[in-house]
Image (cartoon, rainbow, N blue to C red):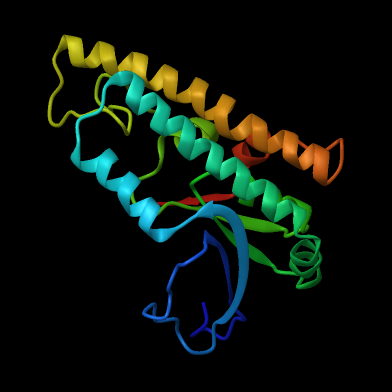
Length: 210
């Protein structure tokens, strides 16, 4: 986009207090707008939690607790972002034509709507995330496509397909309950009471990019 002559701005919403991004190479000509959000996160703490989550076996209850903690942080970051009125004014005043929203939650979708940005792309850093697929209507067949947190590869047997079906149902329920609905309530409390439901806004996404 930048090479084609478009003005490109990278908005970095950073909740990690000791994060060092000096080694990240950003193309010359791309503007960078950094928004520091303090939610008690540190790089060392995140790496410790990631080590426990990735390299150690967790029970079902432990995995559920990990998911709840991560979801709560997303909501907390969203709240702190919405409380930053200077950033919200700047975002609207820039009059962007197009926005790329990350796939972690739906707070960025709400920001796009609040800033009156006419079009946007839901950007996934790998394959399409489960909740993105659910929201925009991409078909997922549980017999062939397991949920993202299920440890399985290749062709599934009957029991694994049953677990996959249940897992997709739980993912839909908990993602909405722990992330999407709380973030909708934040926009209605901090922006305006009649703010649209964020899942409904997300379902109208013009383009999803894997």
